Length: 379
Image 1 (cartoon, rainbow, N blue to C red):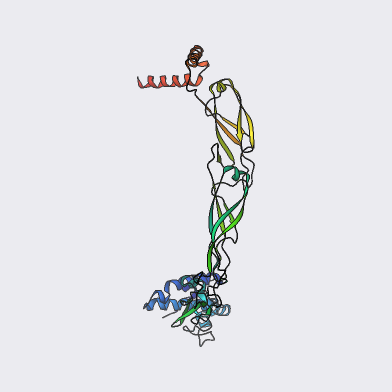
Image 2: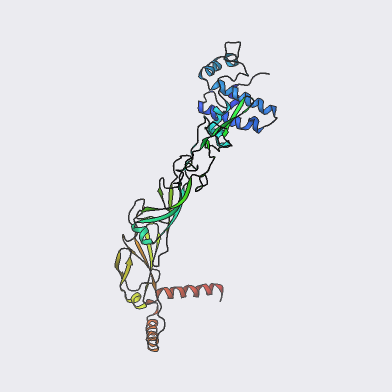
């Protein structure tokens, strides 16, 4: 049976890079690996074919000979580099696929004791609006895992030491040989630690870590908002097997404010005003996060009117101009009136009606619209 072109076997163009070749070989190996196709002779043949193609094309000298003379340039007996079944010099299966199968089986190509980075932690920090806008240094307490002070983090009973694992020889991984290929995986005896503890520490029960509370100072920058995160590098959990610690992420939650609400860099507030102030105008004292300001209300102000106070909002934490304070006016209807006050309002209402639409333009416009609507409906 004629041999297939090696580029065709891997499914790559003739100018494929070394990385392209390796990627294509990984894909085929994952598909036709004998461990995943037990008893499938066709899959094993395709795996061998892909491996041979990769062996030839990944070697510069073999690839050059193959590009010039085809299979004759690399086959034995024709000045080539070895026959179809020749896997010498190609390295073990795990050498080629360590970064792929290492992730699957928990191993790491090349052996060696593995370290594991500590877990990242999250802390939800609730802040008043004032502290979020102006910034503040806050102290927080959180539980964390630290080295056991009794065993020094070894997990072994004080006065003893962990012993080298006899199964893996201290490297934390073992090699499983099956036919012409081998797979490297985490040692089942020591679980990758490279050592075993004969007498565990009674305080940490052999884990080498204990849970404690620690106090940290968090500098909250001015302008943070809901959902912002502050990263404290290295303040997460301690890593296993001497690995680096994780990070701590402080998640900001801004508490509701009784007066202000925030939208991006602007602050909003409702400002109730009396009937007389709305009609005649005047000045009103309104609060801001850094003091008071006087707000001028023009005569004839209606409910819903917005007034902007410049630069009394928030300076965004990521930069940009300071926002504004937006005051929305609501005209408050008087309640609990005395008989005399009711009489005065009735007199006022009568005098307003004499002026027609001049005093209540919106009301008269609405009534005209309603009248036209009913006329069109024939009502």
